[in-house]
Length: 256
Image (cartoon, rainbow, N blue to C red; front, side, top):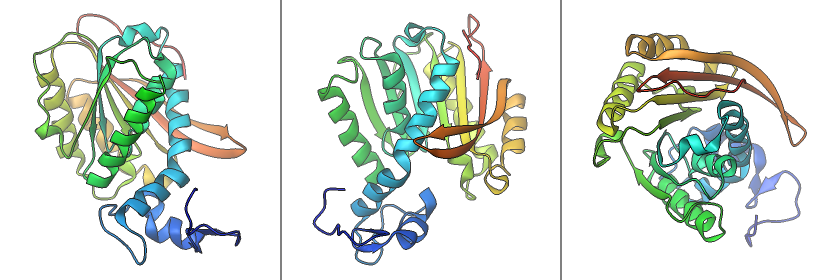
């Protein structure tokens, strides 16, 4: 990290013990990122979250998108709704997979204004560097209820829930109602929802109720699997699921 508070002292970040930063300042990824803590500003906390967590999460989602898609052009002008988006994480992953010749419109949803703000910076940087199509649009909201999707469409809708269900505060029934309402407002096209999470038991406790609620809402589970990925020498134990609600045609799936 390029910051004058960084030192050569081992096991520190911004001059603070790494263990405290990870467990307290960013709460392992589940923290109130709009609030300062100790000597760290809200922006410090978001930057530290990105430093510790975002790269691995992007790599996980790249892996998932590559397994999911046979042809990136199938997502030409797709609508992407990333609930619990953090700093544009799934947008960066999807751009890596589809390239800058496939525009999509991205709606990031996060209760943290600072996360959304930093996500906007990363999106602008990716577009300036040629990593996103010039026609790709990126917007952030605090709730799906706040989004105006415009005229209804029949192109793909991709919903992303990455580590969202690891939070103990998520009401599954409310979440599924929000998902269904957003999809209905977007249009009659097919919907694919990609869920990713750590496979640790305590983080996946809400998944059975979520799966049941999604099935009742008309979604089919196409894929569910647990996998161990080796990313940059570190093992990541992941739980993946793909839910599909068909519009006019079947989704072209690869295999996880």
